[in-house]
Length: 268
Image (cartoon, rainbow, N blue to C red):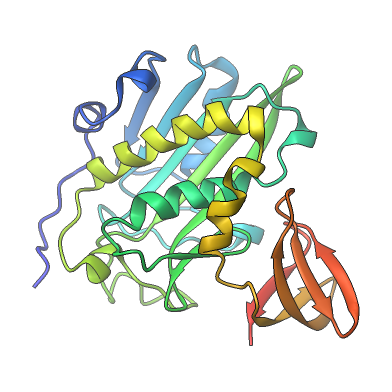
């Protein structure tokens, strides 16, 4: 029986597990009991934050959102709702593959307690046996010529069947898979340590640094899928991704490249 008493989010507990490299940047950690969206909190903070990074967490989101504006169900004190506000050195043209790179980082951290069962469904969902555990939402804003990036990560950790009864897709929590009560503070610190590494690697090497890792975690590669785009539907075979993180597919004898944000895709 999984323990029903869960530790609250605590900035000091998170900081105690952060590596020295990231602590030297003095990232601000904001934890709220309730907020509309941690991504929105990060966007409000970014123009005025003194550090390169700010970290936004909440026990409960009232208007959490996923891709294409879908609602992210956010019960209080059960999951991780994390947004990293990053004053990046990147240009908008250099952001290709960022979501997939973040997906690799999150999957690698979670695969330790999840016994290497997590795979990535292009472009931004982490699944175990077709059940969603985590999602990623990247947003940007212009900071007087500098690109502000918000990396939003939602992870089902302690969520019960009752908590998730309104979710319109199959899902799973980390506790269920690992058969133990996970410490959200420790998970968050582990995520931040690896995301910090990403903020140093990605501006230099881009998605190429993560592509081989993504290929191992790619849930759709070799699968027949339905692609929905602009009210049209296609049945395609997925061939993987290119160095920009675009999805490579084959429709009959035609080879196509699909960009993140343009399409929805599901396995048949």
